Image (cartoon, rainbow, N blue to C red):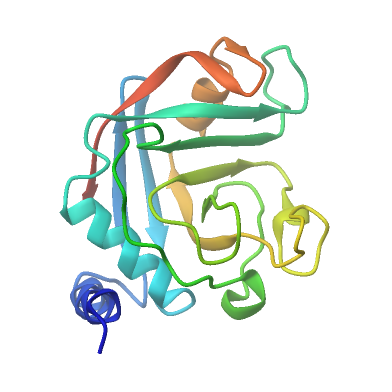
Length: 189
């Protein structure tokens, strides 16, 4: 059995012990406030296991939300888009995660959904985003990705969407925050 698959299986077993009805709760502590999310190991087991492994290794501690997509360049409570975070630009290589599309998970990219960012299917590793509004074009079979395989949704914000919107409304240039928002720590509750 390859090393990554073994680690993912171990992480999945651990995550199930920490879950409530097939869900695992995490907290993302930022300089703008905290975001609490539930992860769905029953729907996206490989993605959740890899994300939990990243959390346990401290990969997200002192990382940042650095990318933003807004439907409107002006801050408002009706803006849609995403905020993306992780360790982009760290120069480190991390294990790749097998792609679990929304066709597999049954999830859809709607408000509050956590999903892994990727270039090609199977290249996601550490970068994740939170959806604001309807981002269902990122689902399997839609045109939001060049290959129509969609992104890998794996959780949902259950508290702190006001913080997500506050982060989204920070000053940006293009799709980058002028000053990245620090993710102080991500922990399993």
